[in-house]
Length: 328
Image 1 (tube, rainbow, N blue to C red):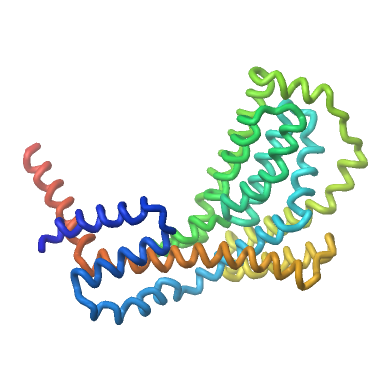
Image 2: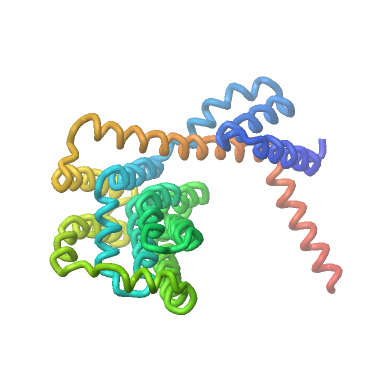
C-alpha cells in the first residue's frame, strides 16, 4: 500500500480517537497497537512492551517527577500562601498590585515546579478569592491566573522543555537558558499591562486600593524569612544548571530534598501522613506525564515502522524540487 495513503489513514484514525475524549496516553497507545497489528501483523505485539519501556529508559526523565515533587511540596504547604502574601504586602501601593502579585507568584512558582497546571492550581486557589474580595472583576482575576500559569512552559525548570529536549536530543541546559529570559520578559510585560490597565482602565482596582489598610513595616518584614529560603533554592538550582555544576536530574533531586527540608523546618510538616499526601499527588502527576511520553515514543515508532515519516519527508523534498524547477 502507498505510504502516503497509509499516512492519511493514520492521521484520520488518530484524530478520531483523540477527539473521542479518551486520555491522550491511552489514545496514542491504542492507535499505535491497532495500526501495527493491522499493517504488520500480530507479531508486532512482541516489540510493544520493549518499545514502551525504551521510551522511559532515560536518566534525564528522572528530573520530571523531582521537579513536580518540588512544586507539589510548596503547593500543599503554607509556603504557597506565604509567597503570595509576601508579594502582596510589598506591592500593595502599586495600581493593580494584587494583579502583579499574582503574576510574580506564578513566575516564582513556575520556577519551582515547571508545570503550568500546578502553577494555576496553587496560585489560583489563593489569588482569585483574594482579588474578588478586594473588588477586582472576575475577568481580571481569572485572566491573570490563566496568563501567569503559561509562564510554567517557559521559565526553567519547564517540564515541556525537558520533554522536548529528550525527544529531539537537544541539551536541556541550553533549552532552560533559552527559556529564562523570554519567560521573565513575558512576566514583566504582564506586570506592565496590569499596571496600565489598573491605572487607566479598571477604576475598581484603584478604588479598592484607596479603601485598603496598608500593611505595616513589621508585617512586610515578618514574611521575608518564609519566602527568601525558597527563592534561594530557585537561585541555587538555576546556578548549578547553568554553571555546569550538575545535570538537570541531579539538580532536581537536590532541589526537591531542600524543599522538603524547608517545609519541615519552617512549617513543621514532617508527619508521614502529610508527606505521603504530597508524594501521592506528585506521583499521579508524574505518572500521567511519563505515560504520555512512553505512548508518544510508541506512536513515533509506529509512524517510522509504517514509513509514514519517511514518505512525508520525501514528498516534501520532491515538492520543493518541483517548485524550484518551475521557478527556473
